[in-house]
Length: 394
Image (tube, rainbow, N blue to C red; front, side):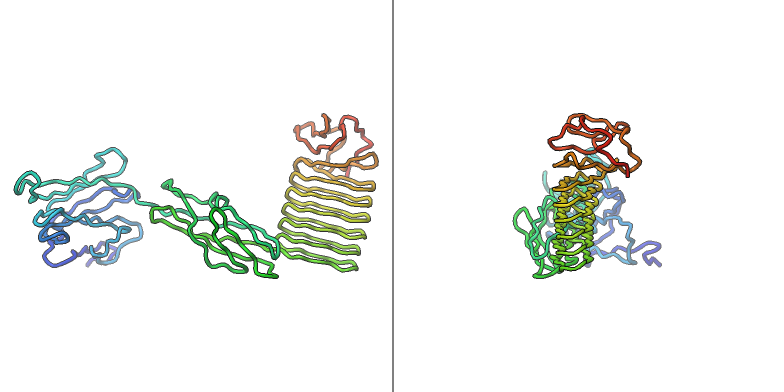
């Protein structure tokens, strides 16, 4: 017996429909790459006595149960084509017609021998063009960083940028839901996420993506919310979060790790070691001799007073030494940095086996000769006047 694994039975909708009087392979009429079926029931009464109906059952790779009820067709698994009028006996003959309109999708032909469009019982045949079924869009997850107790505005266009629709439909966000760690609203072309008061850590919400043709999907947006952290007057070790942290290290010889996120970090009056980590960080060393690392991202480092060491890391960084004899440290391949206040007492440190002889100079730029990479731009300084004494190999 048929059990779904070796085949299945297709039951008509109602008594006396004569479903299965005519059956045929339909080709692939919905363009999903799988062949479909058409089943005629010339005595069905969906639009009048013996008007007749034809039923298209879509093929699927998901398999079938032992029986399939034609009454269960819902547009996703197939559809019904009803005769025009009573006694047409539409569906007396059904068949796949091939692709007769050249659109790459198979079509159908349905016979109704008892219609009277050109006189009593003149009969008609109906060609139904296949068309591709609407495919659901694909929504992909997104992630952002935010400051504590500060609303985050996310442009809808930014969320849609990594979403897709194989049909080429215009996509829109129609709803937001399931927020944790804060609230979210859809406001015209933006989503506005507001963290709960005092919250820091991982927040999230979902949005619903719609293609305008009945297809939808959802994605999760993760928001790393930073902390506002204040150190004391002693020697502190402060770790930020993966959100956008605001850190005031205070006095003392502090060690600060911003971690991920776009952090704003301020040292104090003693010798601080500050590492911004990933993200576009703003770091101010303060007074005394500070060691500042920007990490990955486009960072802004300001040493303040004292003889500071500033390393932008990867990304296009802006470095300001401030007062004192400062050391600006660079490596090939880390991006093009800018020094805003390079002076006679300052030095440039070279990493990655770079030496002075590896460099060339043009205008305000220091260039790695072998790759033509602009290592650093000196604001207001003619780089061609530099000598080996302005550099230190580290």
